[in-house]
Image (cartoon, rainbow, N blue to C red; front, side, top):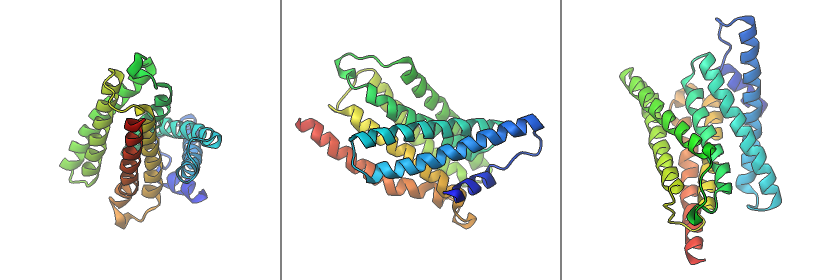
Length: 238
């Protein structure tokens, strides 16, 4: 995992035009980002292979959520201080997926009249604005004939789907009895995919180009589909 820190530090290099104070602040956020991303990747890997739903799962899950949220927030700060589209995209997705995945654990009774909290609407709006930014970035990348444009359109497509899913759920349009568990599973696995994507992108050889962006999703999305079907069937038969 030390290699992850070196790789991220290489990709997110210190901008030369920063003042001494800004440079110190940049390095601080970079350090927190690396630590959070590494801890989140370790915790997420444990969750993927260990027993689900027990006390240890819940404890490690909290560590994963907090680590990913911290890494995601730092990504946006770093991307703002020194433009980095990679950090911007992964940061938005990480914050949204980890945040909503955590929040759905506390939204188990929407079908019975429970109302979402302001933070839930805030996360949904955050992702909606992020999707608008993704589309704009994708168009500019395509015009510049960069492969990143095609990848970012995929992120926008998935992001829009999640926002629609949230809106329907928050309005009470629930079709799955244990929707909160299904959505929690989908979002947390999505956050783990984001951490794996970041690891793959910063460590893969340049010749692999777009492959690191898509490989983690290609591996885990089929598992998300399988798990979703499993728990949806269980909910219907309860």
